[in-house]
Amino acid sequence: MSGNGDVARDVLAARWAVLEGAPLALVEVPAEGGGLDLLIYDEAGALVDVSFVPAALMDVPVSGR
Image 1 (cartoon, rainbow, N blue to C red):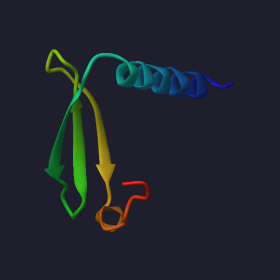
Image 2 (image 1 turned 90 degrees about the vertical axis):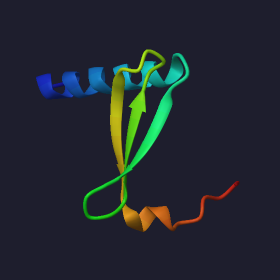
Image 3 (image 1 turned 60 degrees about the vertical axis):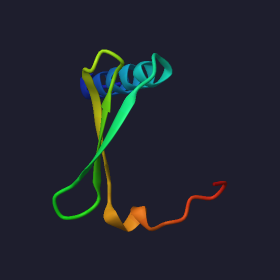
Image 4 (image 1 turned 90 degrees about the horizontal axis):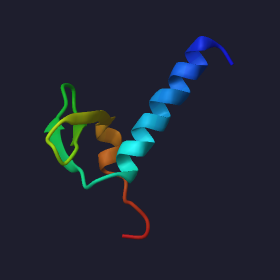
């Protein structure tokens, strides 16, 4: 695996560890151009991740809910 692959694997492992840890706070912020930016904070209030949800996916029904 290249150096970039190692870095990507480490980043994903760190993100997964955060999600398995303590309760998180999720803040939804309208994104520029539509959609939402999801800001994820840990219990200490530190920003641990940012995700983007495109506007096109916001209108898609989620099965099982």
